Image (tube, rainbow, N blue to C red; front, side):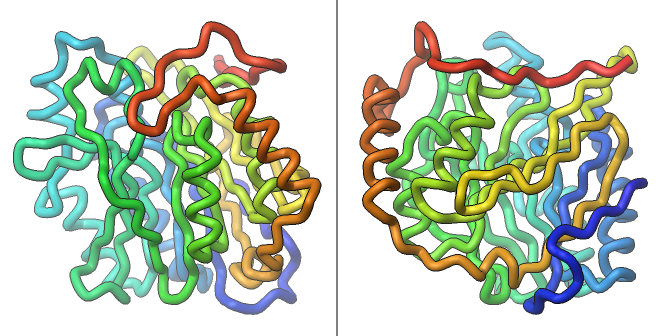
Length: 308
């Protein structure tokens, strides 16, 4: 596995790492074993926080099944706090002293299923904190998923972050609220299959508009027929520049000093305000409480790479 250190070794404040690893379709046992190995590896290398890929427990099941699979999603792929997978995350965090960020997963609460982000941390009183997606797309509504109602910031022992999950990248108001509430890092959670069009340009624009670091954690998706898709891992600085990119279908352990991500002032300048107005204009057809598919998108898209 490739190991990269971004920003050199001179920045203090602890280390965060992105686990650019394989995610196996409907392969909970294999995926959970990968988590155990990567958390142990993080603890052995003084990494205090690890970020797992999009839908790491089972793969991007929302994009692999249609509306007729609604009950299967509920029965097999949605996870409660007490599920084996989630309880293992909290146990691993407590045992190794490593916080674990699950960028996107299906969360089951009573009769409702949400698309959520989770933070499992030894530093949290209950061991686990979640943030639920505010905006549902047509597929998610068809599958009977529920929309979150709160936008809580996630606090990893003083390091503040939050996640824009798929379509939320089209809503600059969500990112603005997060930045105004002190996030050090915006994580953009995207599927390995068919990510939103123009997601790279949109991520760069959000970084520039709000003077914030933006991370797109990538991974390898291994299908049941052994076809492999890959989404790149990107780190974008507050000037809107991609300072790191890992494309490959090779696995990687990407280490980032937290001090680097905390080093930028949160002042939104006049140019940034102009960009914000332009962003709002382009996506004015969207509503945070609804949203519907665009007929077209400006600019070129970047699709996931298919490896053979």
